[in-house]
Amino acid sequence: AMQAAGVSADDLDAVIMACSNFQRPYPAMAIEVQAALGMTRGYAFDMNVACSAATFGLQQAVDAIKSGSARRVLMVNPEITSGHLNWTDLAAHFIFGDVATAVVIEATDDKQGFEVLGTRLLTQYSNNIRNNFGFLNRADPRGVGQPDKLFRQNGNKVYREVSPLVARTITEHVHDLGQDLHQIRRFWLHQANANMNALILKLMLGDEASVD
Image (cartoon, rainbow, N blue to C red; front, side):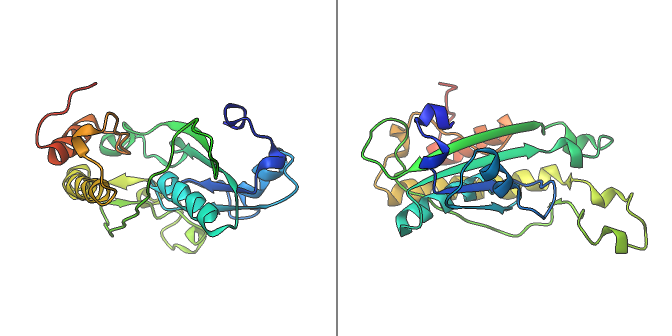
């Protein structure tokens, strides 16, 4: 990502490590990445907003630039989900894999890359996706090998909760930016479910969206 952006560690002001599964609480993984890159200035921190961590990491990077606390931010999103999946639960494990992405966000007049026109976050509590694993495991009188210490979800309820919420959020955001939904060529949706993506686009566009 840094090579593609033409930047070095000395050009970075911040590293944000945003993901749903952390190796440990201390030391922060972001600071370890900062050290591995040879970055001797600036700051780094970890953040977790479950499976929306990457979008929240982008928002924090944009906000840091807007506030003046950073001019160039590296946002890294390593998702090692296989370590917390229950491989006997077909409703949960089949849509997840391991991946890492990295994005450089910067204040610049250079027209290369993507320009951030706007950002918007929205959270809504649901118990239909849950993982109770944590540092209090050893205090659980049932022992540590309980199924609720692994990822679980109620897929049908998640489908019904998420789809209209995502469609409404994107539609309102695009409208507030003065853009036309039907003039947008690409939508990169977070959901790993193709049927859910198709439904969200249909709710937004009023018709079936082509693969193109």
